[in-house]
Length: 114
Length: 111
Image (cartoon, rainbow over all chains, first blue to last red):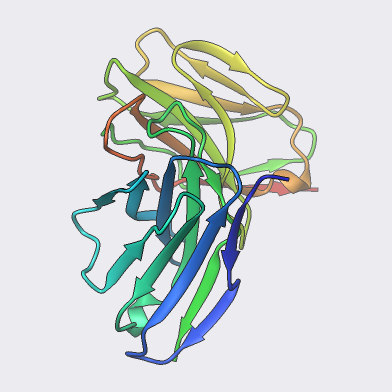
């Protein structure tokens, strides 16, 4: 089945140690999104790619970076994780950018910072 | 983007119909209304989407009045497995801005 895959599902990193989360999709969608979701809060959009066009949300910290080497893969890099970055990180895709196009979410990666 | 307001939580019992209303007073002409469902430790899942009047699928119905300043997600005959958080999103059909999630409604279904 076509899907959005996130690896790993659980990631533990140390304070200040760079970490990379990965997302892949078999849907061949043009748009890929990264969300951060903290406990009991709504998903918060960090950034998204429309093809190779990177769109950063204004309040996304510089500590968060992203790469999309090809249509299928997208990476979230956290350069120096702090305790406040512990959260679920969700990757999503949509065929085209716009609210009429359904977003397909992966299962998420739960990041713990020690 | 249009701001949305939903109840923080709702309780229901199995077999009842649940209606969750979302207010979006400053909805724009080209905005669509979309609802997502999220179970604990999972990513959100698309439920239904509409522009005006009524939309129905195998999971839910979406009622949108003529002024489009609110919308109501209707879940018929809920079961325990419908316990989840439900998010209402409003945003343009096209454009560079991506959707943002509101605070959501936590639905608890009791036996």
